[in-house]
Image 1 (cartoon, rainbow, N blue to C red):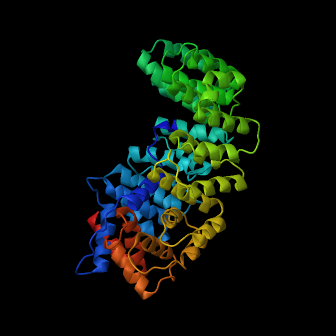
Image 2 (tube, one colour):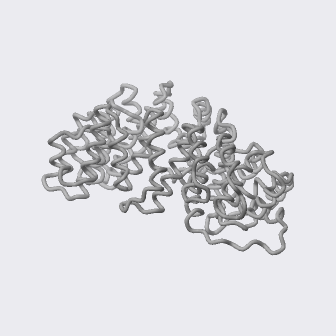
Length: 503
């Protein structure tokens, strides 16, 4: 169900930050400085549709601040003509008040595309709570895909769902709706529904059948529907498309490794290409399954450093041994998919181990590796700092304090710190020298500006210059500077009135 979702907002904000860090040219400062007017214009561009979509990046950046004073702006943007802007408005309001989360009443008042995107993203961000899901399900105009998604989430959380309604959906003319409903029924103990959908799929065109099965395979994995393991095993025997078989096998291996292994062997074949061997190794790594002697031989692990490190990491996870060393060795390969896995897997590690992995990503800024591009290493360090700030704000703060001034590492850590909300990081930025408009100076000032009483008059003026374009930061961070400058100068209310009038 959730495989259709767009890039997560945190990732989108991070992308903008990386661009700001590595690719922006120094813009000229306006000769006649009306800083408040410039800040208002920049804030207005966040609410007005831009051909290049930059207003969405600005809104994503503003949301990071989670400022309660932003509520009037987001309420106004719920009426915006672009559904993507409505999504930012819904999520922005939810992030300001995460205990309440996404408001089910507001969801009923926006464009259907905005509703679908907001629901799925809020679930991923844990901003749509069971009470809100149940409230939404009471709305009789809720679209069926959204209804199924909410029922799947409630069922996974152990909450009761309307099984009678699921039976109705399992008979839907849309095979995808029927297929997902059948899986949820199977999780409730009704296996007959899977037999029925299998019969219906046999009569469908190959293209439609494969599209539906792809989604069903993902639902099995995401919602841990172990009662569908035998159905998946049987279905995979008749799957002809290699990619579909790959993902179906991956889902089955996460549910029932014994049933999944024969399919893994079959897909790998007798004479696999290097690409096939790496993909097969990733399957075992993602599923946390051991790579025994037979699998090592089939993967050619003894003859390839990357696959050997993947196997060592898989075995450490499967045996519940210390995974830090193998993970660090795997990270050093610079392999993009292994890096993505490591960042995701770190979130599931014990606190001390996760902290070690995040710190390792950051340390790589100072230990260049030929296998990794510099920009990629920066992006990974920024993501690691952002996660470290959530996990252990004190450790993140200490790291920022100890980092050399005006270094690339300091820039990356400051951008990562700007993704979070820890007051410890604001205090850690206070001793940083701010003597000009360099990137580190401007980034530190943006962090300090979150403290309503933390700026002197000179700082406020410099913040206004950043908002006006007088820095080496891009549009994304300029949006934050504009908001914070207007807030520090007491001009936020009148700016919001102007923005509302121009929307």
